[in-house]
Length: 510
Image 1 (cartoon, rainbow, N blue to C red):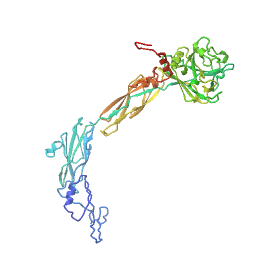
Image 2: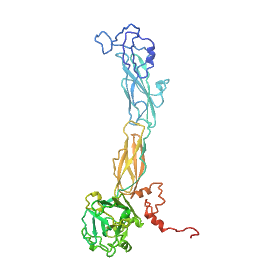
Image 3: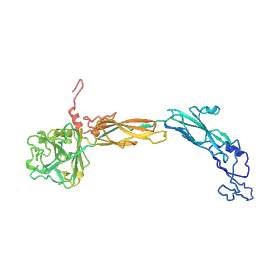
Image 4: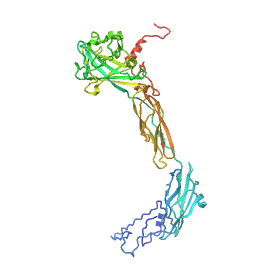
């Protein structure tokens, strides 16, 4: 309804044109005193400033041909997308033009666009002469349909006022769902701390409970390190990494470099030190044939098969990497040694020497009794039976037209995979899954806007190692020099190349 502004002065005809052109049901008038140089002014009473009951508030008298009365605030709102649960239409009735007047409404509804030239707009009459502000629908909305409705207002004092044309529909754009790009990850490895370690020196007793192991060839002694693999079989172990950390307090404190480090795996050859020694049982004088103080490189023991050579500088399939403080050893030959030990007693003993490039040098390595727990020797395993876990973030994206009004519902589900994975939470756009077994998994994100539900899948490949994961990425191209396909270009590849050096496939070879 128009705000009432009363006056005792008749305004000019152009005001009628302004009222007829109104588009938002409100009229604002500004009173301006012409500047004629007289300096005169006047005051107008407002509806809030009346103290004399004989003085009426400002009044705007509307001409008979002005049509300011219609229903407002339609529900559903204009162009709203509704659901099948819609059962009624409602609106706000206007105030009558005159005090004491009454308002009644006629409501028309249907799927044909209203035509003012047709009887009842060409629509179905839902109700006539109602003084209510709502009406029940004859049926639930059909899908993919637009509905039109009109509320005509009958003012008992000013007559019929034709209503505005409103519409609503059941057209709803379904949400657009993207569960994210396929992912290629690998499981965290099981960390096996050394179950027992010691070091010994020729002519001296063992130091099995020391917080460090001295590694040097200046005095002809070696360090021994053992891990218990009895919980695994060879088939379980698919990848391994050994990490050793330099600590202060050794007889020497030289920088760790790869040619100052050599690793050997102890075999069960006759005459070797038994691998079931306790922490204080391995001494200089009960060492087996693998101990050779005259040969710090253990060349004789390697030749006799008493130890397995796991030294990168020997050109085998081993990778050594160091930052000067921490030495990390990995590679297929390390895995093979551990697989053999898992199937033969379950105890894997390493013999650590300084290597060929470290004459009269040395450093100390942390033991399982190390003062700093971060320097304890660690053997990381990836196994088939218990490969560890990896947390994978599933990053979904959902866009929607906002129709119908309400809250979007999300659901993450697992479609396939070697094991059942817990998804927590499963009702958000993004989530995290923790996976403990290698293989290919498929998950699905569903978004439901209340009318339409759309799903999108995402695949997660969980590898046994970073190399395994990389090799399963579509389009993966290996480095041409990675001859053994371990994702490293190292001496192991050189050995393979050297084995075929000067081999000729020509029809005429030298």
